[in-house]
Image (cartoon, rainbow, N blue to C red):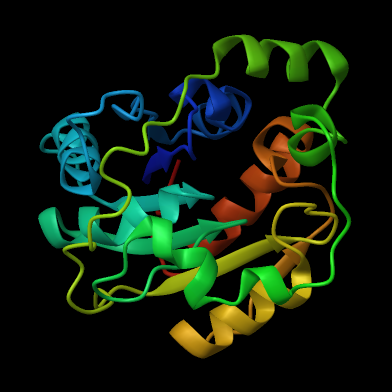
Length: 224
């Protein structure tokens, strides 16, 4: 049995992962889906990582999975607890010492050829069932920007096996953009699945399959 530590993105809540969580629990795994203090102006990346580490407690056999802005928190968690595998899904991939607010400039995001979408449904949830998309918007919180300009305390990428999974229909982070950033920053060729920016809501079964396959490749499943 593995323990999947599921980290949500900007202005979100742990509920984002609830369908994947149900899939993984049905397969015999433990899951943790903490709410980050993302609407708290006094909280920054260290507090986000502390929140996750506190939720983990003394659990072991950890697989940390992070979506979008959660990619800035995930490597810091790996500095706090013993992690066996790190999986970044439709992620932001931080460089050491980089502030989240600087990510867009540093990665030349503004140079990407991409369409502009006028609302959150079209940008983030285009392939999510309407009732789930509405619930996601209802649960969303305002992402505090108060400390997003602070450099990340990340000094070097953690010595943890890392996988990057990108979504072919992601309207926020186009595939060419994430392929380039993953290659430049981690030397990794990403894996790909169909779907938009929020696959935990649009394709939970497929995403759970991928996560479990990654765990199996690392020999982390055992008997369950």
